[in-house]
Image 1: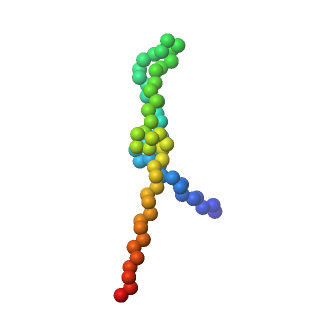
Image 2: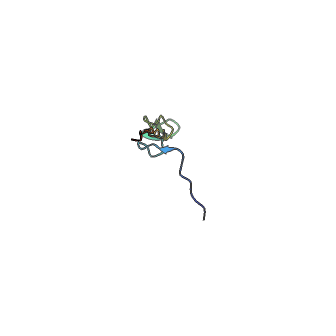
Image 3: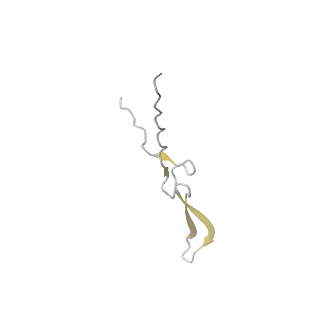
Length: 64
């Protein structure tokens, strides 16, 4: 059976990987279409991912 490899990038917890959305303003344009605003996620800057956490530093212990 094939093993699934985990994703190397972390999904943004604020937008759940959907960084850009179109919001309907409720107004109609002259051609009959709706006016929309495209908004991107501020914490991930519209990428949908976050940086992975830095690995914890290794602590060297002296042997007594």
